[in-house]
Length: 316
Image (cartoon, one colour):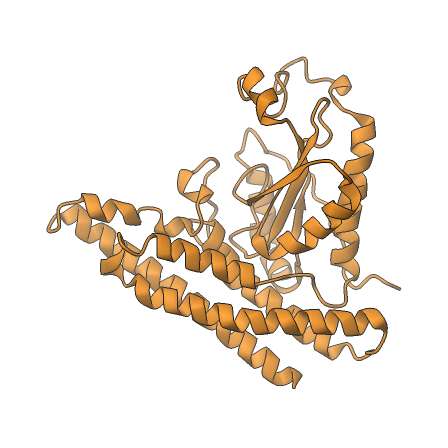
């Protein structure tokens, strides 16, 4: 009776040989269902490697506060760290706009230096990669944390998302590129990010308030939760592709693509503008491309703010 959402498991083929072809195919072939209903994607890849100790999580930042609260509760004194999610494993869900978490224990910096940066163990992709490389006691910890993630995502009346951090990521990256991107109009995009941040703060406040109401049992009406959840999913559909892909909504970035490791990958080449001759054909072509990307980003930030305002007005 507590479940409000379902859980779908995927075991991906063509992970190494097809550059994530299995999960990319799944997204393309199940687009309508995922676009309408999916809340988040939990990627489980190489958990509980023997000798690993430091918990590391990569996620879209709207999920960070949610999953780190669980990690603080279950990890005890074990160290943990976070990084912005980028395309590793089978993370083929950025384009469609589904936020993700990928988390497991890893090696310390000292251990990595001693093994030529063998992040998954020296035996990875070799005949030595056998069952003894799995720490079953550590696997128990992984499964408890994964279960806690999924339980909250499947049962929370109001989704545990937070969007002020999303707005701040956009604003920080746009400001970082402002000087090099003077000719593509980043000032206007920054203003859109600031407006979105103000709206996101009001949304986060409303989300926390309604979460507490449902938690206390003071509210039985499901409509406020449905409004907020739809709002948050629609914002993710708009902004996750911009924050985490170069190709955008209807494409899949190649594995290991450098721009994809940065915030707003489609603006990765902005710094090149300063180094190209002002009247060169290459510069004009690049500037034209980047202006269009800037417009896409500004529109999405404005649309996200509008969605929030419409949702909060309906909650009154």
